Amino acid sequence: MQVLKEHGIQPTPQRLAVLQFVQENHAHPSADDVYSSVRRRCPTVSRATVYNTLNLLVEKGVIKTQVLREGGLIFDGHVEKHHHFIDEETGQIHDVPWEAVQIHTGDGLSKFEIREIQVVMRGKSRP
Image (cartoon, rainbow, N blue to C red; front, side, top):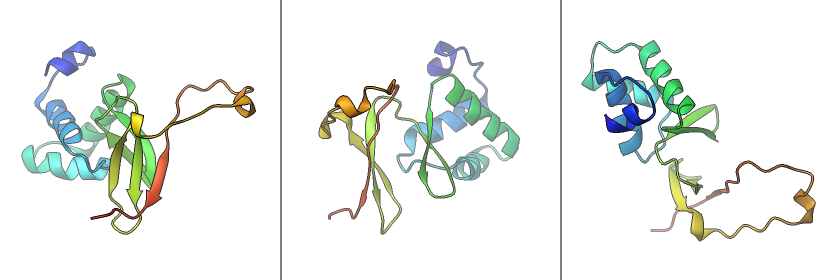
């Protein structure tokens, strides 16, 4: 509840349920995933409420959205700098600590004003 207030968002049970699911779900859910889960907890919540809440949370910087899966956006409750690894066999998305990847920007990027860097790795998870 405090996170919502800190970002100027009026806490409601629906908003709290959406935020809680995204922050606790490390699988990087889609909007439909969030809706399905929140609907089980709050049967009266509408799809529009969930989608509007997700958009509001992104707009206020509480969560992030990214295109990491084909065909749609995912929501990420981990807003600190980090990278992603996508297991091509399972489709699972894993957070990779920022420090685990070294990034060097060279002269070839001097004509760009870089706002953000993120590495997305794809492959197979090891047991």
